[in-house]
Image 1: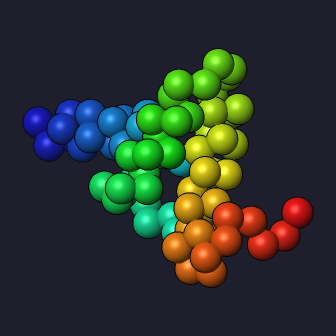
Image 2: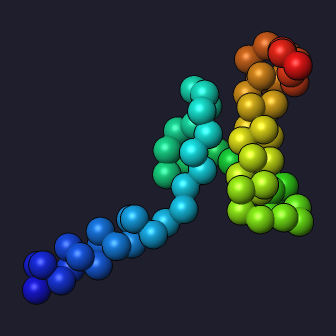
Length: 77
């Protein structure tokens, strides 16, 4: 029974999609921040495939992080 439970739990963790953004704003799978909710809603509202939505999510998180830290949305073009 333990083997079956382990296989099921491992399968769930491997099948869950997580945003793989770089930067120090990314806190992992259990990110319940306001920024995550805002950018997730924004990315889901866009048309396109999952890669385009993930790029939009990461860009949104980066902009919000720069805004919070430095007071500007983009530092580099």
